[in-house]
Length: 79
Image (tube, rainbow, N blue to C red; front, side, top):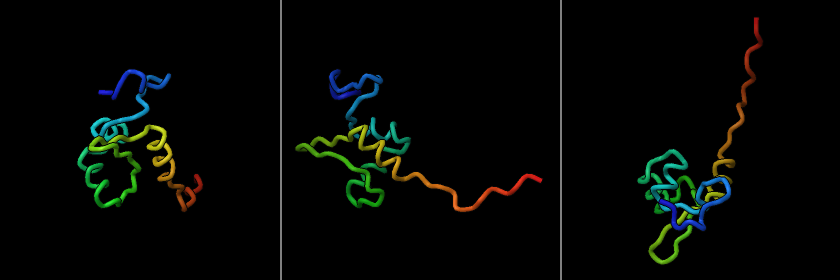
């Protein structure tokens, strides 16, 4: 559930997510996000405002883009 209606961008996607929403957006489990907040292994950026944890859509998009991998091997030529 979005934080509030003014939190929804023109695309219909919320600009900020709580943990469960961010997990769905990233297609990972909420527990993965919770563990990452503690150990930082994945380095997924988040906001903490008091006891509330939020993830900004634009920041998650940048994080996803930074994980993009380009193949190092060339495809085999067609015979």
